[in-house]
Image 1 (cartoon, rainbow, N blue to C red):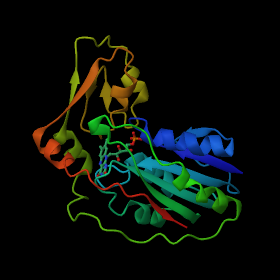
Image 2: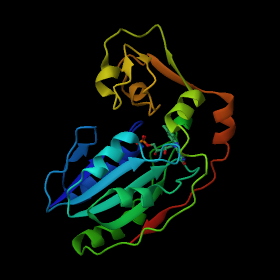
Image 3: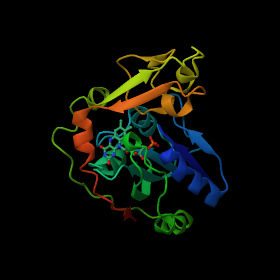
Image 4: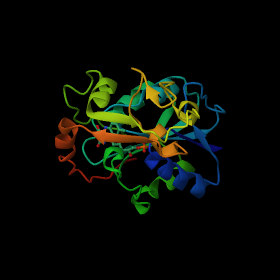
Length: 228
Ligand SMILES: Cc1cc2nc3c(=O)[nH]c(=O)nc-3n(C[C@H](O)[C@H](O)[C@H](O)COP(=O)(O)O)c2cc1C
């Protein structure tokens, strides 16, 4: 039995999860703080984004309580840096990791596209059929990456509630961090921008501050990595 689990802010990781769900004819389970794996006999494919060279908090909680027999770890990243995310994820799970991949894709803060190389992921299908332990190496992570990643995102990205807001609270229903109410965020916000993507009135906008704009110019790492 195979199951796909996904955490996604602006929809890029969801596009990759959709690819796996289609290949394996299964549904996608959204990762929230309450999500649990379904069976100890399953192979779980976990798709999530890299945020500030880290694993998003709800994904960390999910990985720590996973009980699946085997796991495939897929991290999407916005062509800047993936840090050491797969190695850190491997350390968090008790299940055997049978494959891992870093998938370069559009950056949320640049309104990038969700296009990715589907062919490059195909060897994972074979590995799922014949599970075997994968080697996930340690990779380079910026020394400052662990210093308040969510706070750094909030500093870099301004979230703007426009007059189009109808106080419908669809943003609140979608927020994975319980960090927004009627278009106003609190200090729990990680700037995944799921609220922006899902606002039915297009009332939420974001603006990158100059410091982030400068950082986003470093976007030059278009590197697909597969570990089997
Ligand atoms: C809060 C935040 C932090 C990010 N940090 C990084 C990063 O450190 N390195 C990188 O290459 N991309 C980074 N990105 C880009 C995302 O990893 C990339 O766009 C990802 O595919 C988004 O997936 P999602 O739409 O499923 O959330 C970041 C995006 C967000 C929203």
